[in-house]
Image (cartoon, rainbow, N blue to C red; front, side, top):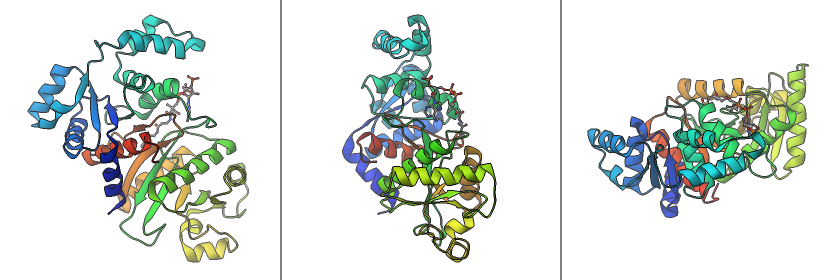
Length: 334
Ligand code: ACO
């Protein structure tokens, strides 16, 4: 069984309730139809029920009738959710009127459903920008204890098997935190080592990437990567980290041996941690397009409940895959 088949098979055993706030978006509806047909999760769509049903019938999506549909303008829990929002944002001075207004936004409503225990996870982002999906999650669901920074990992599956483990690598942060400092980068490296082990079963061999290998260049940007590597190794001695490493030294055995002969990671890395979001996001998109890699994710790491964000260029199968991953995260499997 492939990794994705295993993830979906696990999800089918879990019966998790996954909320899709973009209930009128075509790819989301098609994905919901497939997820319900395959029993991957119980689906909650947010949107005007008449409009959702009419769009589903226009598209011939017969399984949508089995989804729960919540109208963001008018639903039974609106008042209770608004009270919860006011309580959670007391320090920010949120008023009940402001909360009631925010709840009309499906992205806020979805996070409140999770916070109140009415849904187990959320997948959104087919039509909303990442920031708009994540902000409500940061404000109401927040991070896991001990985690200060949420980040996004991609499982990259390459058709060529020569890199990583049989062509599989995990990249991070490709989705969330624009400019991490050394401590935050270390947190991202540790979170990605854990995500890699939990989702793929691989022993994480983590390279913290730079334009320098083992001090070949001197710059404050390189110092940050060196410091992050040290902090990550201290925080999680059960995993192997190394940096500063250039991308070729990290993944090409011959180059790794030459540039970093004493490294346990050089030439063997299966986890690539990028120094900032620009390099991470650019790299995953280039590898996805130019090397025809399958990019599964972003899997968000460090959030207190599973909320995952899609790229607006996502396909129906990207949504199905991310819902299956979210269901697994909701059960603590990942
Ligand atoms: N982890 C945890 N919490 C965070 C993080 C983080 N990485 N970033 C911000 N927060 C929290 C803040 O502490 C704050 O909490 P508070 O309101 O309780 O005090 C709240 O989130 C809002 O913080 P702001 O700094 O106001 O957040 P802002 O909205 O400006 O930025 C955001 C956060 C939206 C995630 C921003 O960092 C961003 O836009 N990142 C880039 C996302 C992106 O565009 N990715 C690329 C596309 S994704 C793709 O291609 C797959």
